[in-house]
Length: 268
Image (cartoon, rainbow, N blue to C red; front, side, top):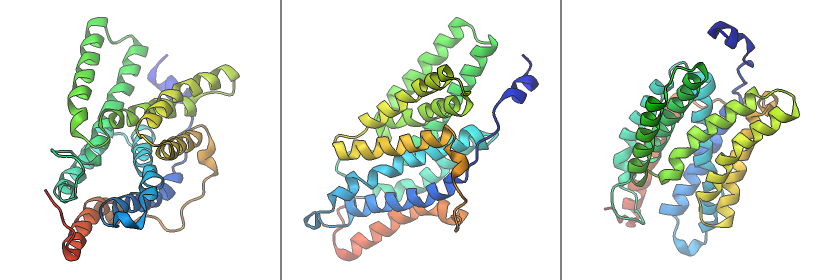
């Protein structure tokens, strides 16, 4: 089958209106998480916010990056580089946060950028295998290198090895669910492709509450990929692009200044 014929048979690109809502929800839940973790005194008893609302942000960010990388951009590696630039800008204010662990940890943008890079490689690998354009030795070499990079980078990024898997698994599941036909067999096969993502989402946290919020967020996005995307209206107030790009490093800088003013700073 030619590339043009394959494109003609592919399902239409899904609606992305849900990401307008997702942007606001991700920023709000991330900010609640960081305020509860770094600013609010423990005696206030708001740890539940970190273990509940705070567990929505990362799977939602990962889902939006995977969705745009899979459906909305012709250059996902360029998209990954743009996320990396935000991560570089955010790293210094991120390092000013009081950390529970010692050592250098790269912020979530590095996790998202590397995850998208891995997911893009995986999608290209599947296409080459389908065309018969990849021999066994080359496949083994590429897979071995990918695993080695994943193992080496995992301890240095936020959310670790499991976090790096989220975007590649999202992309596999989204593509399967969106492309599945109406037959029972196809739908069951697509559902099976989503199970690894839900398993990783459940393993990312220790408490039952945190697991529940992370898995529920991931499941909601998978339902969107399965067809619910068409039911979501546009957000009344679109996220300003500059706010979206600046909030991650900016809110860390604001928290650092606030801690200094309150005399609660305990920076490394």
